[in-house]
Image (cartoon, rainbow, N blue to C red; front, side):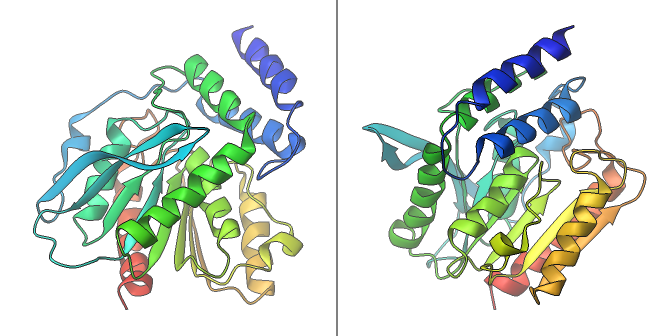
Length: 287
């Protein structure tokens, strides 16, 4: 019953959306897919999260912009021995919010030699159960222009304040879809985009044709959100358009398999995906 009530609430709220990154139909489907993928999951912290970055890093809370007079605060991580402007990465959280897992992933990215900024589209709120996450993601999807503005200011902060010579994006789950949307916001400016099992992936060639950056997509064979059929359609569309894309579908794993604080974590697949991610980012952001 809780599941159906959650879906009914999402349907009622997102139908009020008017414009922006998400149309009412897209927002409703995105929220539905996220609930379907996570309604029995919980972000349980594990020791795996404590994996140290490759080099010492410094992390801090920063203000990277404002919306309606309210500060946008995120988590910025850089190598401690940073001596020059580094390529940067916009890090976008799952539907749980900017929690300790995402902060640790941000530190690990910084440890690869980047300025990594984890944005927050929930205004400082973090979910520890599916019902709360559903409310947070639904509230966020009610204001698609604020999400767009948030991502735009993150890019501007890294370009102007951090003097990043190149900028990429990465996101998981809800953030995976927003990583693609960041690419669509900056189709010529963004230098690379990494998408981990993004819900409700865009496959319309008219929208994807503007993209000029290389794309890395990490997906799961058992995932229904997005299902393999959608992933293959996404890949086919990109290749038909002549876009540089690497799409991987990992066998016998499910949605959120790369999240060490989730219940679907698969160490072998996650480690391989991380290796592909670091190689991809180094190739396109450091060269």
